[in-house]
Image (tube, rainbow, N blue to C red; front, side, top):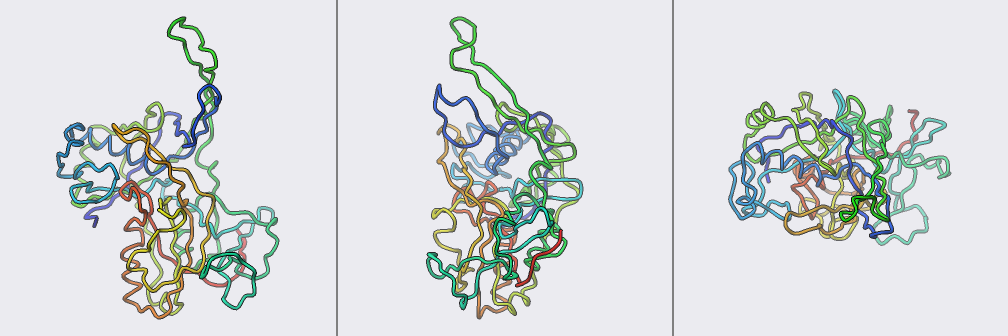
Length: 391
């Protein structure tokens, strides 16, 4: 889908929210359910329900095949097939006044005591390193060639401001790099409950449960870019003026929807720079659902001739959800946001890199499942050999 109009929405939670993790539960055994940040699927459903209510769409008719001018048609696979959806999202990301925050790249490592960062890059072909990786993948090494003690550094898991992400994409190892932990945006708030027996109206045996809720901190919001295949901003502003409340998460937590006035801009490296270096990296802004787990079964056509030589990944995240009238969706182990894929593209000319940037620099989804729902949003960048940097 080619988006005719894109703009950003901020969702400011009013209540403590509950986004249950996607692991299975054993009845009468498990009494603890952990809460996780919302997946793209959760926010897509919340915004979609809010849009349908604001547009006066009859869901039963929509699901039966009735086309809507702005939304398109119903799609259980949340994809752009003919007659399917004509809108999509990119996100969610953490939002702050003046900033949108993206997942820290998995190639960034942090030394807490020394307040330094070190960067992983693929080893050269001449490095004599033992590896069981399949060809042509290479082991990742620290870029300065000296940082060898893994105990000194840990993955810089968290979030970075969009301006920091842009510098990372332009350089690969930017000075002044810094990241924020999840705790900078939210905190956990425990809630306790019991099941009530319908026969006795007393506590039901074995039905004590604990749920940690997410309390979003003052000034923090969920930011989502919304994309339509025709002009839609005026209509969205009209809906917000009539109803700015949306419900999302377990037990329908409330949130306030507003248009983000300061929209983030993330520039890609100049194609001429990529031609000179003969390489690029692909960064996942959001989790992606691949048939092969950590990478696509087949890379898109505009990647043809580029060779994947290494990848930096965190542990996979679980993604599931609920399909209206069908029950639970399939469980996926997704490549998490922040994943970095390193490519060599020797012989590519400027036009090849321009086409790549046009297609996959915060544009098309690379996810093989649910591409409309915010999964598989990518950026194009580069990397350089260098060292660790002070925070």
